[in-house]
Length: 468
Image 1 (tube, one colour):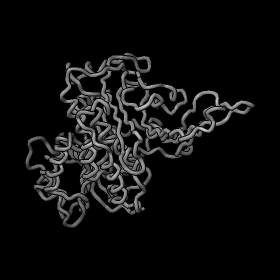
Image 2: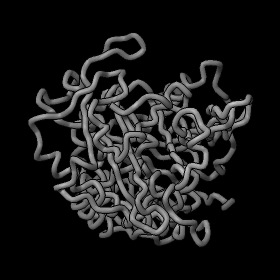
Image 3: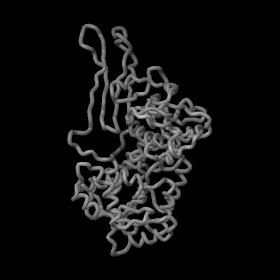
């Protein structure tokens, strides 16, 4: 494992939702595990004016409720000793010059290796980077400078390229760490409708997350496990995805929007009744894609990607359905049609692997039934770490493996851009589905054969639920 160098972690938007829910708790878990060296300092930056003690009290107030049985007071004391605060009020153009003086003062306690975390809205990225670059805080003079970009990178291909050009004026590609924003995504249920209304499920989940999972499943083994070799193979897989023409969008894509319904016995409003949502909005809260990877290994194999808000179950799963053999040797002896075998990888909320296969039922006749082999990656007593803890360590260590390179981002946008263009022009209708259901009806049109369907769950009862 690569050693963590001393560094200063600067969090822009330190008082915001992402910092409160993900970053600060993840950093504190690293503190409890004693994975942060003594000379790692955390500087929170936000528009609010706060005194040092006020900031410490605020952070402690964020962390204590996470541990109802009692927080590790020694770890909290160590953690608070790392914390500093710097206000960047709106309209205060001199704030970044003061920040430069604070960080680069020779007697400063802040280490010259600096990691800038953009825990702010995507529209704020270029503004902050421009201000940092304007006062020289992105130049690698006597230490490294690393820039962590949160949330989706751009709004479409053109905006992603424009954003990238603005970053390249001050940093180079090895300095940029683009986090797959799914790990810290906000949901409509938590007051993020203002963000989601401008994004939608296709941008929010499929472009920025599910296509990355597809690349990991479909890619060839890399030459080595180095970050660049790994990312080279992901890009190759993404580039092999068959383009969706605008004329074929309806054969490859489906969208929906949740209406009022019931979740866990509680009535919930429809998307159009959510605060901050336009009454005539056609923003999709459900999106599904059928894709083909046109390379030697995957030619002719459909990949189905699906995501939805307020559905019957919240989980991320990769389900692989095996083909039937070219010749069915048992077709005259078996009772009933052959059943497929499956491998399922559970990603969230549970890391697990499940295999389902058909075996003969003991007896004189040839009957088969499904058996399941279940495995979890965790053992009893294993510490449950939020993915952010590992990602933060990766940035400190300079490991790009789990971060997106610009050609990955651009290739993913090229996959979904034709769909986005067609949907943006079709604003008179969107399929509805009740909150708490498995999604909108009509998605069957994406499947090539009658025996293909959505695998709704890792639970056995979920296997039989057909596509609507």
